[in-house]
Length: 116
Image 1 (cartoon, rainbow, N blue to C red):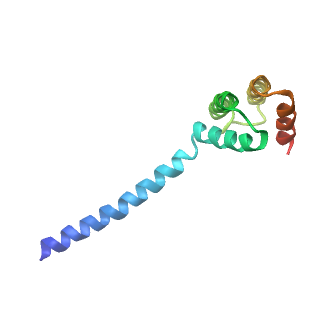
Image 2 (image 1 turned 90 degrees about the vertical axis):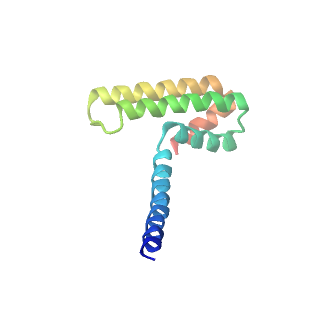
Image 3 (image 1 turned 30 degrees about the horizontal axis):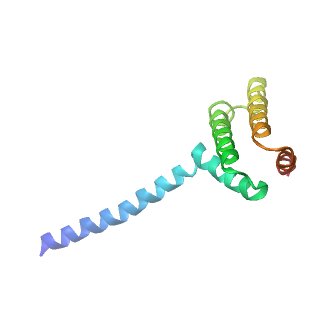
């Protein structure tokens, strides 16, 4: 009877522990550059009526932008001239990639969305 009780207790602890581990991995996944880029592109797709090629190009641009931000801007001293220069450079690269991917009307609408 003691063995049955201890086996039951151990299996309950493992069951609750697995749920906790799964919840932690979901929160970590939400912070990845690919997930953030996918969310942004999905939002833009509904607002700008993007084609498949445009979605892929914007996904690549936003993924690169988010990765560069993480490496060089986030967690750094924003007042630093180097960090400000990096931020401007990455924003300019994103803007250029978006301009190449969208048509004129879509690009104007994208600019107005960025100002909000």
